[in-house]
Length: 423
Image (cartoon, rainbow, N blue to C red; front, side, top):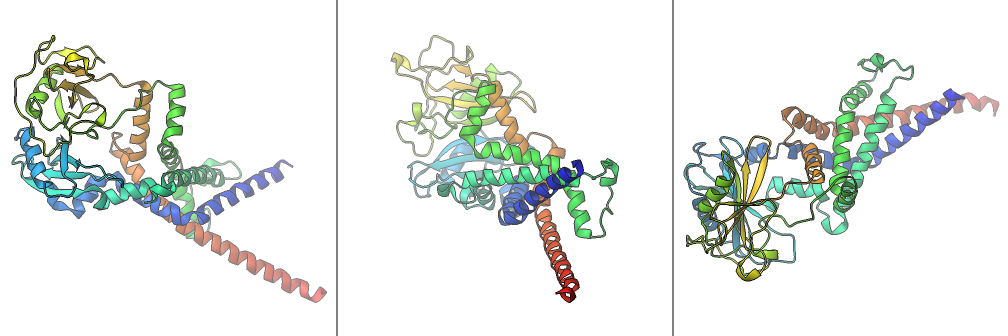
């Protein structure tokens, strides 16, 4: 009885594994390949567009305002009145400075974002990239929602992740030797068929990482449900807008250099990561053209200019008119620790952004694990393999399925011939 029950259960998981793999192959293959390519998105982009990374040196010698001004000139002719919103310094030696820009005028369609690549030593513009029109941008959008955002594409990708998770778990069950001898399962020659051995061996070694990547992808595909679940077990900060999405202040009291200097005074020995320009409180306010920071005397404040405010305190405008526009400065204390400093554009006071909650850190780690970022080169390569192997599984699985059908038909035909004399 026990053997019969085990055989039935194995047949059940085999059918689940088979029909999920064959039935969703046309979705599993492109989602997997696009995810694998995105693990090395910068390397792929550099291969396709080498001029964006053709820097003349590694030293960042120009002031931040120079990079912003050059980028503003580069996007000045774009329809919609593009405005620069911030810059990111090179993440590694030999990488370009990147300035982000977006349309000043909001449209009903998907938002457009430009990235301007600049040479760190000279500040010269290397290239301007429309994110959605680029290959990497297309891969990001396709992997996230299959280019079907208006038709619940993100949720479809999430259910594809559920299928991939089930394929991984049922694959482990089916791989496990029936006699329980684990080492026998590691042999290449479990079958005389090459396709079976390839499917079997690659599937075993990648099954656990593939399950992890699939599970984290499910979390990212259902953000509201995932956030609700995470907040039930760990504290999370209230949802907030992304930096640079409000209306950029046209004329600032502080220059980018002065805002960065104030931030660095509050976090000694930290290196700059990114500078985001002030936006109007609540994302509303005067529309901005090209950013033209002006150096003016800071207005009087109770706290000396450059002094850090208590953690979590937000600078306010005079007269109690709500939060004042602030520069958002990201600084790196080490390779793994980044802090954010808010610099009041009017008073020049620096405020440490509230420390991230445990749930926020867990959510970041889930994204990093899925993307293969911030987790080391070994895991990054493993995540690449989780995108490369599924197409191999699909091809070998379909071959095995077709061979199985052919064998079954041959067996049925043979039985029919044997029974024909008795008829």
